[in-house]
Figure 1 (tube, rainbow, N blue to C red):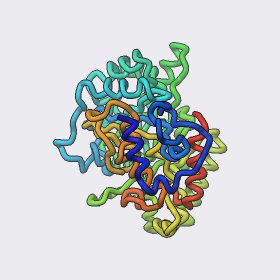
Figure 2: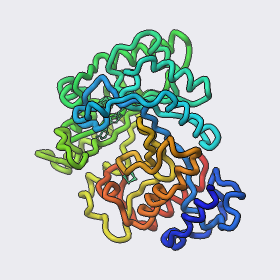
Figure 3: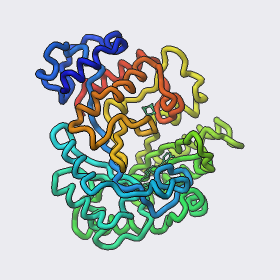
Length: 387
Ligand SMILES: C[S@@+](CC[C@H](N)C(=O)[O-])C[C@H]1O[C@@H](n2cnc3c(N)ncnc32)[C@H](O)[C@@H]1O
Ligand code: SF4
Ligand code: SF4
């Protein structure tokens, strides 16, 4: 089956045109049998390197964030559901044989709001899946929950600002004091048991109203013993008028002032020894107004359809972290090959490789704009090196 899928893909004229010879060999999980009469060279740009696996076992949540489409203030009640009982197990089976590093980043909804969520984590760990979690950490965790959190491979803690009033305004019902208390308890549990503290990071969904507090958020991470702050940006959704606006809604703040605030956050991080990372396209979007440079010969520097998997609560599979439509469904595929080499995902790759972008990719600020030639060189690098 995979053989005919690849042949179909290669019938696409654009792909044949853009493929360049490379003696680098076959995609990681394509065997020679799969490509009997197709040259490995032609497959070069189509090969993939699966990395991030995001899994949403629920869309239910204890908070009502202003800007969260799946579970927040604007979510429809009937869309707040738990996934099927075999959801997580099915994903684990898909990853088992083909993913180079079987892992899941459990997300949601709010996983810690699920009944017996520690049981889900224990099962995965017993099946040798590396488990990470993105959580609001907003309720006080009991002892079993603290123990489970301490056994994770990584905890990404969603917090956008250290300002209590602002935090409550956009993440209604959040409790910053609970977040801090939970962090201290995880650290203290690990110290008592003499085990390593799971890597902790603050995951900040930055917006126009919270950017002023970014330097202080970095300092708060330091004070909490959290060594890393990752900064993302709020994504707008077409038909909903979120009150929380992207950073590039300047209001009275100028572009220059915005750049200065980022610099202050970087200096703070540098001085305090906190690692700070900013989603690729954000600084670029501040420096270059959106669409200004999306002309012929340009594309977004995005490897998502070559590397990422996001499993929605209903089984929808996305290979994009920012709203590109689903490319397959968990209940219709039996291998990663079918997802990554299916026609919908191939279309997404082709759009990025040709610069003929979808409306989602055009408005996306998570990935910066580059020349197509540059994109190919960087993709080549990405696909050529392991890890
Ligand atoms: C959907 S939540 C699920 C996990 C958990 N409930 C939490 O808040 O961490 C995962 C992350 O998505 C972010 N997020 C939600 N809506 C977003 C949006 N419109 N744009 C960008 N990030 C968003 C949240 O801030 C959070 O960091
Ligand atoms: S806590 Fe997470 S899942 Fe819940 S509404 Fe907020 S962003 Fe969405
Ligand atoms: S919307 Fe497009 S450019 Fe943005 S992350 Fe998704 S695939 Fe990449």
